[in-house]
Image 1 (cartoon, one colour):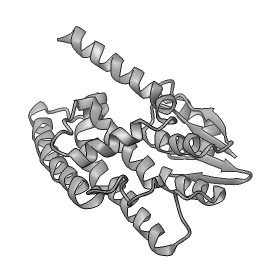
Image 2 (cartoon, helix red, strand yellow):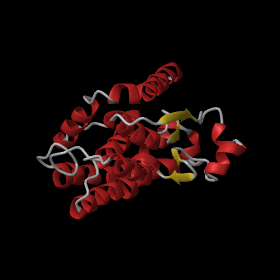
Image 3 (cartoon, rainbow, N blue to C red):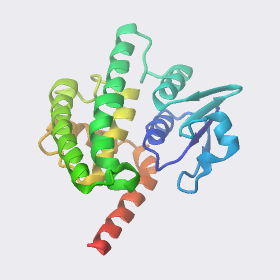
Image 4 (cartoon, one colour):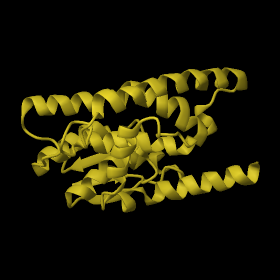
Length: 223
């Protein structure tokens, strides 16, 4: 199998964290988003949407990180996506929760606008209103994640790490870009500390940490 990815891509990190944690042997093909390699005809033939990650398994091509995570975990027989129907349904539920409301409010509402002007409105006043609303929605979602989804459990689906943790942690880690304070959400902070302590985390997130450092240096120089 071959995985096309970029380590600065949030959805790519969700997959590569699982790949590294599970010890899967997969060929990794770096698609440099900043250099525009996702627009190359060869890559567009794999995914006309020009997004990573993309998985190739022989002549089978799969896009979307959630689907890729499930496919890889299935292929490996990983306990991170167990065969039990109800356990899978819970994992699917959590992944959908992160992929929809949380990503919309936290990532697209707050984190990505801090990363690139492509995600900001041209009118500064309108952008400020959007971010104000997103901040309120994000706080509410963190309350739900802290109290109702994680609670006293080690992970978002209970006692064992699942592919929902790999996806959710990728999205929550983006909040580092806006120095989001997780202290009001102790269960979330504890869960993220557990994820960051995984041996696979540091190599998977090295490029993201470099990007964060560069953005902070730029902000200091601009300020």
